[in-house]
Length: 133
Image (cartoon, rainbow, N blue to C red; front, top):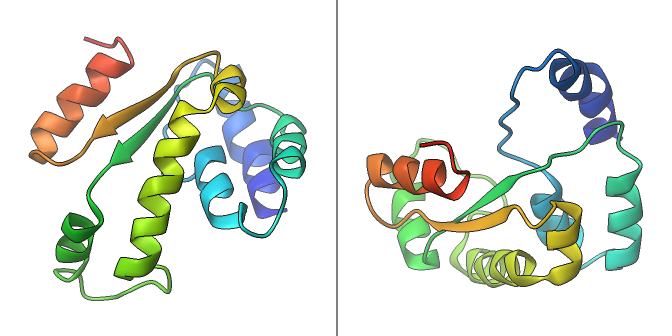
């Protein structure tokens, strides 16, 4: 419900005005975080009911051990930020990026990009993946 509300109030109006929208959470995250609870067909139907959804996507790929090391530098922790879940999530995100069914929803513009190098290198990889250079 909150994602639909956000899409209706923020994302869709911005896209109608020609404003690019970058979001850190989206359909791939829904598949990872809700995928154990709901069938893929239900999640896809929910995604397709959104007023507007992305035409491109980027999944930042990182080794779970690297993610844990990065997270330990932060002041606060989220419930899902543990090595076991991060191993599951990394595998799930990779599967999603390779899924023909999910790729079709993104017009085959869902990209898996390594975030292992520096922030600057990751940014360059994202720009290249989205053909924005």
